[in-house]
Length: 338
Image 1 (spheres, rainbow, N blue to C red):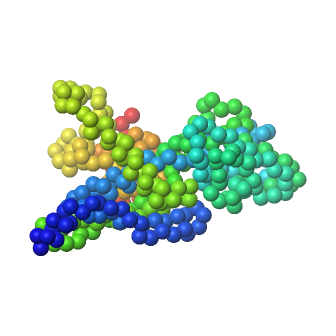
Image 2: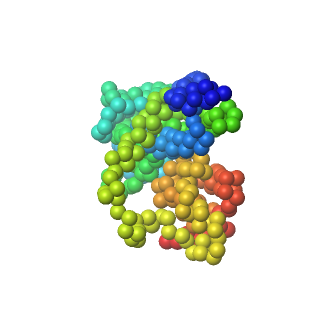
């Protein structure tokens, strides 16, 4: 027994892909096992890895579209089946794989009748469409359409802003998230003092990154983010106790000053990543500067519905996660502090 225990304790933590499959061009799946961990370590790594996969992985997306002769997002053009708004939504959903750092440009110039897809776009050499069959617009008459695009790399979700755009130029809500969803679970093996944990991670991507590329980049990002603390000297750390203005999002709202110890604990210790929300809902909340559970509990369902791109489905997901994980509910009335 002692020999076995020593062997487990000194064993190097390893990551192994135990399942990999391609459902279609825009849905890749990977399942990974990381072990062995001491008790509590697997959950720590699982939370951090999930957060990095959903929010720190760089993706490629169309950020701006210029359609010649079009002056308004809700315009209709003779000879085009879709409204311009629908065309912009289709462009947002195109999955791209890119290897660049600056802004790239692409064009699509087509004469109808024809169904225009991602394969009809002329991309620069450093950019490639994951699925050439992704639909953009249908031309029903013998007219020509030219669409000019701007393409960027970034992290998370960027909501388009009309400021600074000229006639015919439209911002596209950019989704820089190769990872569509992440699940993790912790499993025990061994017994007594030799008990260890196995971390199981499941990753779904849109095809612009494979699951193994995504988990590798997430691991590198976590190392990069934590590396400054490895070289901190005690004399470099100020502990004056004056933290006014440092963490505005951590301040307790008035609803937590009435003896609600659960609210205080959640405010101080819990970030919204522990709700394990889908990527879209999670990034919309972060964009609205909702970082902690306490921040979230300053929003009623009506408040959340006013966040751009945050629909009823996302509100239901947040409400369900709050109740299942923290036995807490969103306020009934609109209380968000402006």
